[in-house]
Amino acid sequence: QVQLMERGGGLVQPGGSLRLSCAASVRDMSSIVTMGWYRQSPWNARELVAVFRNADITDYADSVKGRFTISRDTAKKLVHLQMNNLRTDDTAVYYCYARQSRGPRGSYYYREYDFWGQGTQVTVSS
Image 1 (tube, helix red, strand yellow):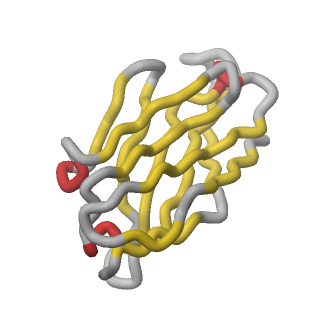
Image 2 (cartoon, rainbow, N blue to C red):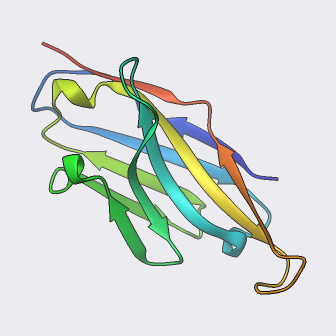
């Protein structure tokens, strides 16, 4: 089981910055194969913002490249999202996401499970 707790959302003016953090409660951090951030606004489906995949591979949405940076502290089981030059269309609920693997990879017993945090509101408005 994986529990995720986000913090750092809030209200910011266009062009401003925010930093989101996600703390993972998991026994074995190495079982986490993907971890990062998604977002959802009232007008759009939930979409990927930025994630780490399979150790050090990062994946960003085109709309945030050059403005957002994902980072992590594996020892502390934390993932951060630094958001700079925020725009009004970045307004959304931001969710921390993790995919955990269980069982030997390639075996019949291998499974992957998805976990979500409760979300934190980011509002970009003047």
